[in-house]
Amino acid sequence: MTDRPSPSQALVGIVLAAGGSTRFAAGPKQLAEAGGRALVRLAVEAAVDAECFAEVLVVQGAVDCRPALDGLSVTVLDNPRWSDGMATSLQVGLAEAGRRGATAVVVGLADQPGVSAADWRTVARADTPSPIVVATYDGHRGNPVRLDRSVWSLLPTDGDEGARTLIARRSDLVTAVACPGDAADVDTVEDLERWN
View 1: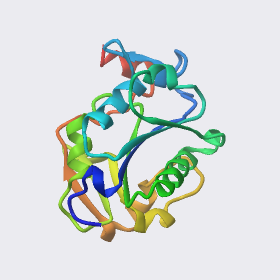
View 2: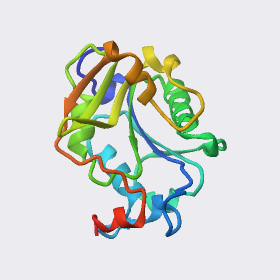
View 3: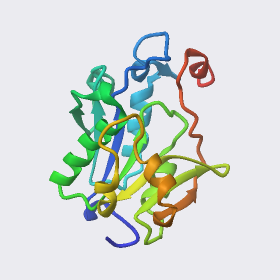
Protein backbone atom coordinates (compact mmCIF):
# COMPACT_ATOMS: atom_id res chain seq x y z
CA MET A 1 0.00 0.00 0.00
CA THR A 2 1.29 3.46 -0.83
CA ASP A 3 1.27 6.29 1.68
CA ARG A 4 -1.49 8.29 0.01
CA PRO A 5 -4.53 6.15 -0.75
CA SER A 6 -6.84 7.19 -3.56
CA PRO A 7 -10.09 5.64 -4.84
CA SER A 8 -8.16 3.69 -7.45
CA GLN A 9 -6.15 1.95 -4.73
CA ALA A 10 -9.14 0.10 -3.25
CA LEU A 11 -9.51 2.10 -0.06
CA VAL A 12 -12.99 1.41 1.31
CA GLY A 13 -14.99 3.43 3.83
CA ILE A 14 -17.06 1.55 6.42
CA VAL A 15 -19.78 3.11 8.59
CA LEU A 16 -20.89 0.93 11.51
CA ALA A 17 -24.63 1.43 12.13
CA ALA A 18 -25.81 -1.87 13.59
CA GLY A 19 -26.24 -1.18 17.31
CA GLY A 20 -29.38 -1.53 19.38
CA SER A 21 -29.33 2.01 20.87
CA THR A 22 -29.83 0.67 24.40
CA ARG A 23 -29.12 4.04 26.07
CA PHE A 24 -31.18 6.05 23.61
CA ALA A 25 -34.74 6.36 24.92
CA ALA A 26 -36.38 7.71 21.75
CA GLY A 27 -36.24 4.75 19.34
CA PRO A 28 -33.47 3.73 16.96
CA LYS A 29 -30.59 6.15 17.38
CA GLN A 30 -29.41 5.72 13.80
CA LEU A 31 -32.67 7.22 12.54
CA ALA A 32 -32.87 10.06 15.09
CA GLU A 33 -32.46 13.42 13.41
CA ALA A 34 -29.86 16.10 13.92
CA GLY A 35 -30.45 19.24 11.90
CA GLY A 36 -33.29 17.53 10.01
CA ARG A 37 -31.27 14.49 8.84
CA ALA A 38 -30.88 11.02 10.33
CA LEU A 39 -27.64 10.45 12.24
CA VAL A 40 -26.75 7.53 9.99
CA ARG A 41 -27.23 9.69 6.91
CA LEU A 42 -24.99 12.44 8.31
CA ALA A 43 -22.21 9.90 8.99
CA VAL A 44 -22.52 8.23 5.60
CA GLU A 45 -22.68 11.55 3.74
CA ALA A 46 -19.44 12.61 5.44
CA ALA A 47 -17.73 9.40 4.27
CA VAL A 48 -19.07 9.77 0.73
CA ASP A 49 -18.26 13.49 0.57
CA ALA A 50 -14.64 12.77 1.52
CA GLU A 51 -14.28 11.55 -2.09
CA CYS A 52 -11.37 9.23 -1.33
CA PHE A 53 -13.01 5.80 -1.23
CA ALA A 54 -13.56 3.29 -3.99
CA GLU A 55 -16.84 2.68 -2.19
CA VAL A 56 -18.59 3.14 1.12
CA LEU A 57 -20.10 0.20 3.02
CA VAL A 58 -22.72 0.62 5.74
CA VAL A 59 -23.18 -2.23 8.24
CA GLN A 60 -26.66 -2.35 9.78
CA GLY A 61 -28.29 -4.74 12.22
CA ALA A 62 -30.89 -3.68 14.79
CA VAL A 63 -32.68 -1.34 12.40
CA ASP A 64 -33.06 -1.00 8.64
CA CYS A 65 -31.10 2.12 7.69
CA ARG A 66 -31.78 1.90 3.95
CA PRO A 67 -34.69 4.39 3.87
CA ALA A 68 -32.52 7.04 5.57
CA LEU A 69 -29.79 6.50 2.97
CA ASP A 70 -32.00 6.87 -0.10
CA GLY A 71 -30.13 8.42 -3.01
CA LEU A 72 -26.64 7.78 -1.63
CA SER A 73 -24.30 5.56 -3.62
CA VAL A 74 -23.38 3.08 -0.89
CA THR A 75 -23.66 -0.64 -0.20
CA VAL A 76 -25.67 -1.65 2.87
CA LEU A 77 -24.66 -4.90 4.58
CA ASP A 78 -26.68 -6.79 7.18
CA ASN A 79 -25.08 -8.12 10.36
CA PRO A 80 -27.32 -10.84 11.81
CA ARG A 81 -24.99 -11.02 14.85
CA TRP A 82 -25.19 -7.31 15.67
CA SER A 83 -26.30 -8.04 19.26
CA ASP A 84 -22.97 -9.82 19.88
CA GLY A 85 -21.18 -6.47 19.74
CA MET A 86 -19.50 -3.95 17.49
CA ALA A 87 -16.64 -6.30 16.61
CA THR A 88 -19.05 -8.50 14.65
CA SER A 89 -20.15 -5.51 12.56
CA LEU A 90 -16.55 -4.56 11.90
CA GLN A 91 -15.88 -8.13 10.75
CA VAL A 92 -18.85 -8.00 8.34
CA GLY A 93 -17.45 -4.80 6.84
CA LEU A 94 -13.90 -6.17 6.62
CA ALA A 95 -15.06 -9.39 4.98
CA GLU A 96 -16.91 -7.47 2.28
CA ALA A 97 -14.05 -5.03 1.79
CA GLY A 98 -11.71 -8.00 1.40
CA ARG A 99 -13.98 -9.58 -1.21
CA ARG A 100 -13.84 -6.31 -3.12
CA GLY A 101 -10.05 -6.21 -3.08
CA ALA A 102 -9.56 -3.45 -0.51
CA THR A 103 -6.01 -2.89 0.70
CA ALA A 104 -7.23 -0.77 3.63
CA VAL A 105 -10.44 0.51 5.18
CA VAL A 106 -11.39 3.65 7.07
CA VAL A 107 -14.00 2.92 9.73
CA GLY A 108 -16.39 5.38 11.37
CA LEU A 109 -19.56 5.27 13.46
CA ALA A 110 -23.14 6.26 12.68
CA ASP A 111 -23.65 8.21 15.90
CA GLN A 112 -21.03 10.94 15.54
CA PRO A 113 -22.62 13.82 13.59
CA GLY A 114 -19.64 16.11 14.16
CA VAL A 115 -17.21 13.90 12.23
CA SER A 116 -16.89 15.63 8.87
CA ALA A 117 -15.79 14.73 5.37
CA ALA A 118 -12.54 16.57 6.17
CA ASP A 119 -11.93 14.19 9.09
CA TRP A 120 -12.50 11.11 6.93
CA ARG A 121 -10.20 12.59 4.28
CA THR A 122 -7.46 13.47 6.79
CA VAL A 123 -7.35 9.91 8.11
CA ALA A 124 -7.63 8.31 4.67
CA ARG A 125 -4.80 10.39 3.19
CA ALA A 126 -2.45 10.48 6.18
CA ASP A 127 1.11 10.29 4.90
CA THR A 128 2.48 7.52 7.11
CA PRO A 129 3.57 3.92 6.68
CA SER A 130 1.80 2.95 9.93
CA PRO A 131 -0.86 0.29 9.34
CA ILE A 132 -3.27 2.02 11.75
CA VAL A 133 -4.15 5.71 11.58
CA VAL A 134 -6.38 7.21 14.27
CA ALA A 135 -8.17 10.55 14.22
CA THR A 136 -7.60 12.83 17.20
CA TYR A 137 -9.73 15.76 18.31
CA ASP A 138 -8.09 18.21 20.73
CA GLY A 139 -5.59 15.47 21.57
CA HIS A 140 -8.19 12.76 22.23
CA ARG A 141 -8.39 9.69 20.02
CA GLY A 142 -11.61 9.03 18.17
CA ASN A 143 -12.98 7.95 14.81
CA PRO A 144 -12.55 7.38 11.96
CA VAL A 145 -9.68 4.88 11.99
CA ARG A 146 -7.71 3.62 8.99
CA LEU A 147 -6.81 -0.08 9.11
CA ASP A 148 -4.40 -1.57 6.62
CA ARG A 149 -5.27 -5.10 5.52
CA SER A 150 -2.13 -6.37 7.28
CA VAL A 151 -3.77 -5.80 10.70
CA TRP A 152 -7.28 -7.11 10.00
CA SER A 153 -6.47 -10.54 11.41
CA LEU A 154 -5.43 -8.90 14.71
CA LEU A 155 -8.86 -7.34 15.29
CA PRO A 156 -11.43 -8.86 17.67
CA THR A 157 -14.17 -11.05 16.23
CA ASP A 158 -16.70 -10.51 19.01
CA GLY A 159 -17.39 -8.12 21.85
CA ASP A 160 -18.28 -4.46 21.89
CA GLU A 161 -15.00 -2.93 20.75
CA GLY A 162 -13.69 -2.51 17.25
CA ALA A 163 -10.04 -1.55 16.86
CA ARG A 164 -9.67 0.13 20.27
CA THR A 165 -8.07 -2.85 22.05
CA LEU A 166 -5.58 -3.41 19.23
CA ILE A 167 -4.70 0.29 19.20
CA ALA A 168 -4.12 0.26 22.96
CA ARG A 169 -2.09 -2.95 22.85
CA ARG A 170 0.06 -2.18 19.80
CA SER A 171 0.90 1.52 19.87
CA ASP A 172 3.89 0.72 17.64
CA LEU A 173 1.44 0.18 14.76
CA VAL A 174 -0.42 3.47 15.25
CA THR A 175 -0.10 7.02 13.98
CA ALA A 176 -2.48 9.69 15.27
CA VAL A 177 -3.56 12.57 13.05
CA ALA A 178 -5.23 15.78 14.20
CA CYS A 179 -8.70 16.36 12.75
CA PRO A 180 -10.83 19.51 12.81
CA GLY A 181 -14.23 17.97 13.62
CA ASP A 182 -15.96 16.70 16.75
CA ALA A 183 -16.09 12.99 17.62
CA ALA A 184 -18.69 13.26 20.40
CA ASP A 185 -21.08 10.29 20.40
CA VAL A 186 -24.83 10.64 20.53
CA ASP A 187 -25.76 8.05 23.17
CA THR A 188 -28.75 9.74 24.80
CA VAL A 189 -31.57 12.08 23.84
CA GLU A 190 -29.74 14.79 25.79
CA ASP A 191 -26.67 14.26 23.61
CA LEU A 192 -28.81 14.69 20.51
CA GLU A 193 -30.17 18.02 21.73
CA ARG A 194 -26.69 19.49 21.30
CA TRP A 195 -27.01 19.03 17.52
CA ASN A 196 -30.53 20.47 17.18
